[in-house]
Image (cartoon, rainbow, N blue to C red; front, side, top):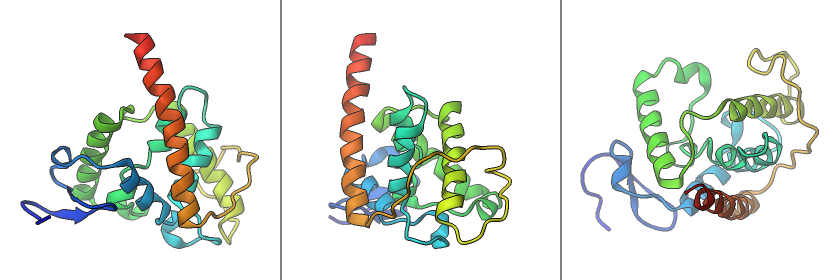
Length: 186
């Protein structure tokens, strides 16, 4: 397949994704899962390797019931356009605009809520507190995690292959629940 028009990236499994026109090219969930599984949290500044996919799967079991699917997909954009550490991201307005556009496109494609519900944001901060205790090599206080109780879970540092597999399993499990819940609501 030839790349045509606009900035595009090749995706896992074939095809291309146009980052400035994200609705023009649907992305398979496998491509997002693969990207998240191969992306290390905290810009790789943790030990052991800890993927964004593992973060999403673990948090989807911790979040308030009813928000599991949203938590699983809350970092979906990172599977294709990656993330930038928060202090730098705040300085890069154009990146933030692109990220929001991709997030809205994925929300339409996969059927999750944007902006993320408060329950997802709280669970994400509790995951951050958990991760700080378990995968970071220093123990100084993080303002973002301050006041958030860590979860009583064990971060294992899955391999990318295992993280991709578990992310897709959890996606298929939750997608079925979301689909049947929507059918009942109609």
